[in-house]
Image (cartoon, rainbow, N blue to C red; front, side):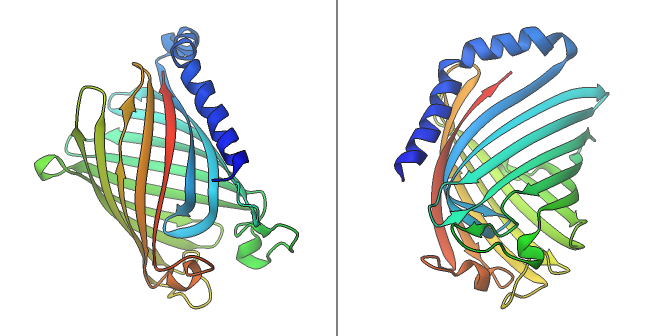
Length: 270
């Protein structure tokens, strides 16, 4: 891990943890009467994979989410996300603004969302000192609509199915996954999750990749640790297994078909 990455994540983590209780109380006093809840989080990842596609190494990120019940069984939310690659070889930064409606149908939950992606250094990033990409690799932005259905399964497992349509490239992504949480102690848990993705209509596939095929399988273990009533520290380790729609693109310098990466985040809820 580079020194500036240590410093960035350290500052974010200390700022969130040191002010967790006070910040939560202050926010609740401002918006609590409006029925708004949310979470502020920040983290560091050794490698950044999104839907099975590698974007960069050593990334820091921040995320803010607000939600409010707007009708019986219907909740609205707004999400703001920013990430920046700390790798000296690549300049990549991304900001997302999303909004979603979540409906609890009793037997399961439906989430309908919209996300605007902004790629400040192009979709594929720009090598430091190099030329910015063209075509899809140089895209500045993308817009997406998505629908997710989730429900509880057997033996404490939960499952979800997602279909996302990228309106910018007219590509579709599908995903299904399972997850389960275990309580190790009063303050420590263990979260397991596994997802598999599929590319329809050339969903960000490139030369050498299959345009319609499985993208990846992602298996993750996380260890959420409650620091206070509102603050949680979560280290994790994941394995991204590239399939035919990602294999060639992901198998770059120092990367193979299967990549194990790790990171940690700290979050404050209100």
